[in-house]
Length: 189
Image 1 (tube, one colour):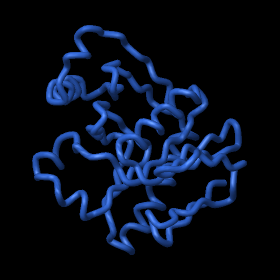
Image 2 (cartoon, helix red, strand yellow):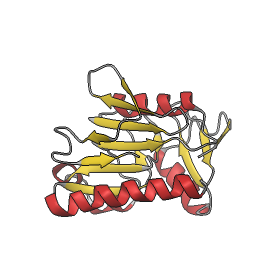
Image 3 (tube, helix red, strand yellow):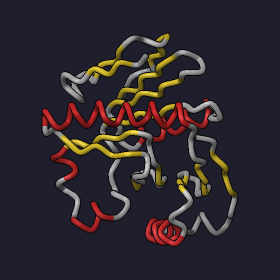
Image 4 (cartoon, rainbow, N blue to C red):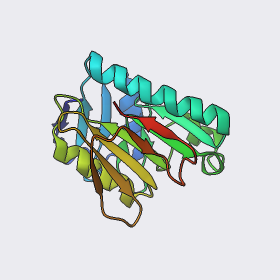
């Protein structure tokens, strides 16, 4: 997704999570995120190839989750209110069921105030790599346990794990959910 970053300082620096939620609800046709620094990010729609890949990854994770019942799967339309101050929408997200169930029904209905345990970010043709890598680091700082940045343009998958250096793999055939998503293996090609 190509992102347009609007600098609406000082407005967005003082925008509360609730006000950001209201702004998004008033502009439902515009996908938005907000960085921890308060930058408002307008996320462009993706093309067919990226959309197809994203849907494939959601379906595969969803099928695994249906079998295990270990958590909840979310699409790129879900905005998570991260502890570090950002409001982010990963392309694919998963939250462990025990953590999800600690949220109130209102928190679950709005932008959940929780960092996913697992995310996938898929680099589309128009995405710049550095902002996606920064976003992955933001997830890690917010409590992410495992994340994959899939980069078809450079034929790589970057694997982000809590407390570890980023591992870069040359487009592997599969990646494993490790102990975060036990038994989950995703075919990348």
